[in-house]
Length: 328
Image (cartoon, rainbow, N blue to C red; front, side, top):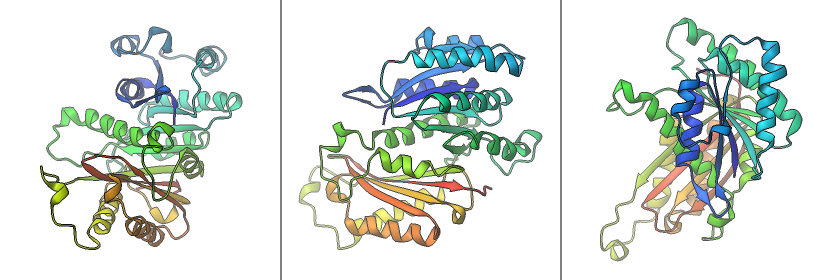
C-alpha cells in the first residue's frame, strides 16, 4: 500500500517525516510520500529529508475564511502535482493541537471532493485518564475529525515500557507508529507477497474494507523472538500445538496493548495479521485467533490472514478494530 502522507502541526509533521525517512521501500519506491504543514517555519526547516517544495507554512492566527480559500487550496494544488500513484491519503496530527484539528477537518473535506482514494487519519492523543482542560476536550475533537475521515486510527500516548525516560516518550510513540504502519503498508505489496505461500492471503482491500467502517480505529501489536541457535534446524520438533499456542498468546498480548483504551464490543470490523517464518505459522493458530476475536467482538465483521517472512527471527501478530463508538 503506497500512501500519500500529510503531517499537520509539529507532532504530525515529525511523524510524517519519520515515515518517509524510515518507512519501507519496494520496487515501486517508497511506501510513504510525505508533505508537511505547520504554523512554525523553524520547525519545518529542521525536518530534513523532505524537499522544501513539500513543506507548507500556514501563519499563526489565520482566519478560517482565508485558510479555506487560500492556504488549503494551495496545499491541495501542491498535492495534486504528485506524479507517483498512491493507494490512500493519510493525515497525521495531534488531537491536542487546535491548529491541527482545524486544518484536518477542512483539508479532508477538500481532498475527498477531489480524490477517490480513501482519506484516513492517524492521531496522537494524550492519556484519556488525565484530568485537564485539554484532555477533557479530546472526545469532542475526535468526533469532529472522525466525521470527515474514512477512519481515524488513534494512538494514545502511553508508554508500556517503564524503562523509557519521560523526555523520550514522544520518540517512543513515533517509532511505535512507524513500526505498525510499515507492517500495514507492506500487506498486499506484490513484491513481498509472491515470495512465499500464505495460509490465507491478505491484501490492501482487506485493510481498506476494515478501516472504512467509519468511527474510531485502534490497533495492537506483539511479537516474540524465536529461539534459533546455530543448530536450530536440527533441534527436537516442537510439541503439537506449541506454534498455535504462541500465536494465540501473541494475539492476547496485542489486544492488551491497544493503541487506545476502548470498548471493543462496539467494534464493527476487525482484522488480524500473523507474520513470521512460514514454518511457524499454522492454520490452527490463525483459526484460534479468529475464534478469540469472535468472542471479544460478537458484532464485528472479521478479516484475517498471514504474511510469511522467510528467515525472520520473529513471529508477530497485529490486530485492528474499526467502527468503535466508545473510548476510555
